[in-house]
Image (cartoon, rainbow, N blue to C red; front, side):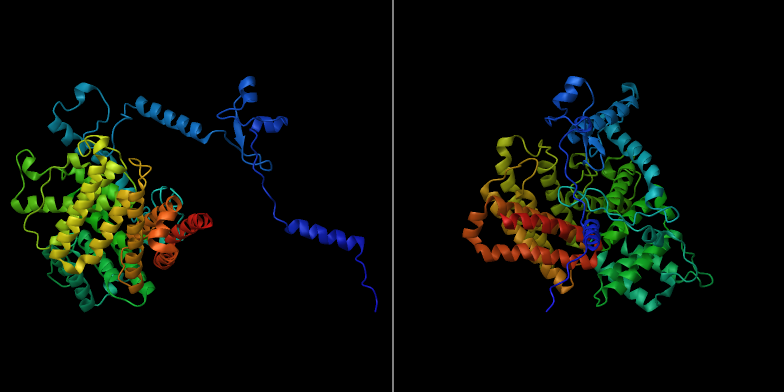
Length: 572
């Protein structure tokens, strides 16, 4: 046998050089400020400025790392405070009120006192007109124009319960796919008349009663005009007719039973593209424009990547305020509306209200209009109790959100000592609402159950009003979070879950609240439920997010964020 030949010095050097090239560079965090790092002197790391910079009367900036030497603010908090102060000074220079509440229609927009309304009655009406007019005209065309760009990227709102407060990037090609004009036959023309009639029947009988912002007879008339537009002597269809019919079919397809979800989604999106080519009515504030905006919200519930729900519900809020829908028609000067028009205005407003509360509370944003500013009565003669029951629940949800998260107590919460009684009252009202709603419509128990379970999580989780809940509240939060996971998983696994946006947001909020309770009262939970039950629920949320990611690609961000938090809690 021959001894192994030793490697030559040259070959050893080349091997080491290759290893060095493959070895990843390690970036070490630099705690010294930029000035001390540059001068190679010891930095005490004091904030907002180190002692050396204070003594030298020099600005103290941070440095990202020793290699890139990228300069960053020494104190992020101080940097943001300075930026806010600059913006406030700029707004004051323009004569705008920086202390106003954007959700309250009684806020002012600055200006000389003599130019403001002299009565509360006129002040409310002026804001509804002026604020909405300025914002609607500025944003309407950019948000809802097929000629410019439609917001196809969906914002995963609320940095409090999703990994990023910024919108996830969307391919420019995908955005352009929605907005470019189409030649030849449209998706609407390609659907056989018999199939289209079945889809419209499904929409008018099963979907429209849930959110009745358009009269069902009117929907059929629009469909008939669109179908007969090519026949001689027929009543011509308007662009708004084509928009509404295209949206109806797109929504109806998404809510029907199907095996190939990708094919159904593709057909629905082609109809959505067709609708956007006829969305001119939505550019200006009008009653029809508001109805068109509401049907866009309805579609985005089912197809979250189609549009930004937060942007669209904000646009709907400005339209509703400008049209004065938050005030009952009987209060308006001269009462110029017929009985049918009054009922229609009331119905459309409460549909908007239900959407606004659902989206704003779920995404942790300000309300479009405060409850104290609303005087509109409930519509009468509704043939489906679901709509009214939905609005009643949204009013409870609105109060919960206002007190716990916006921290506006009066008149809902007279003093801090009454908080415990208020929490118990909210619990009782939600349970009573569920019992009454299920007694009227037993088939909707699943929806009512999930709504109340998530409501209990919303009530008992840490919040600005109660950042450190009691042990009893945390246990209730855990119990209802497990129910939310089981309820959404059962619906999603069976194929009955249609509203992806709500499922992802509600599921993520419940999942993070559950991890919080496990971290802060694990012994009590282990004693009551056992380790096996806790682990099953923890992993069930992971399975839910994996399943939802197949339907909505951007939901994968929730899965990644949850897995990071879960790994930390499980290690502990």
